[in-house]
Length: 329
Image 1 (cartoon, one colour):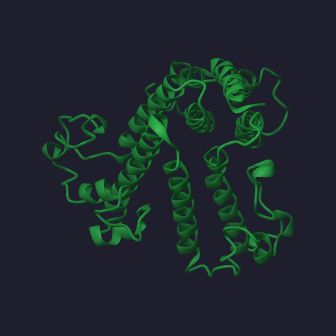
Image 2 (cartoon, rainbow, N blue to C red):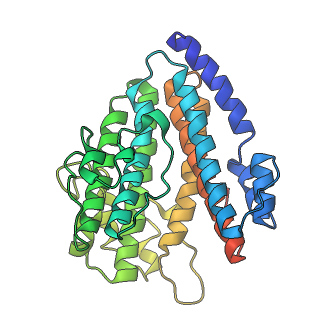
Image 3 (cartoon, rainbow, N blue to C red):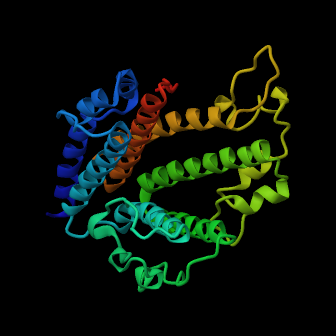
């Protein structure tokens, strides 16, 4: 199918999928379910399998992810020569799979763990388990030939995260035109906010100093610094007093700050994270609808479905713990 025809066809199908998805205000229905069985019925419109609750919880997440990936792969397949950045969205998930393998090998597991099914978009050779060198051979991860010892495992996995972020950043930076800028801005703000939340958690929950936090931030330049587009805002945040509300009222992201109360106030990273997800979801929706019949609109669809997946995970966890997650839409 020619590119223009494929874009029109895919956009129409993507609209249909979103109409049945639990995004935006419809996400609230996920949290209204009384049991995992009810949640399964809502999501898949079939009778839930008779399996233990803990297995059903995992099955819900796996089936939701597989459906999401299957739909996206089907969209890409409509193009004779799809833009590289569309398939590059799988890169982060492939890194997650590789990290799962590293964790299992470091723990001495004999059986390969359950991995996210990326179909033909998997470049790693997981059939070569448990030989790590053969798993990564001929891929972008071929530098990882030996299993790291327990003291360096986190360092290696962070290196993989940075590799994924840099790869994706390079890919989306090549998108041309106005829609390219919109896609780049969506990813930029998402990564900036992830860095901010992570920086605050390291500072508040682990008592790390500014100098200790910076090396743990995501970056796309040679090193994390105040000149890097992803971590400059997080570095600035580390200079703010987390218990002084006045330090945050003029912040760039002041709308994400938890409200001041009569009791002792402190900036809440979890509040920022929840708020930012909702805002990013709305921006993804605008990207999808403002640039119809373009490949960039598919990125908006991809991010919307990622938000749906995160809501499904929250609903599953809430039902397992008998808690109702709080999330605005």
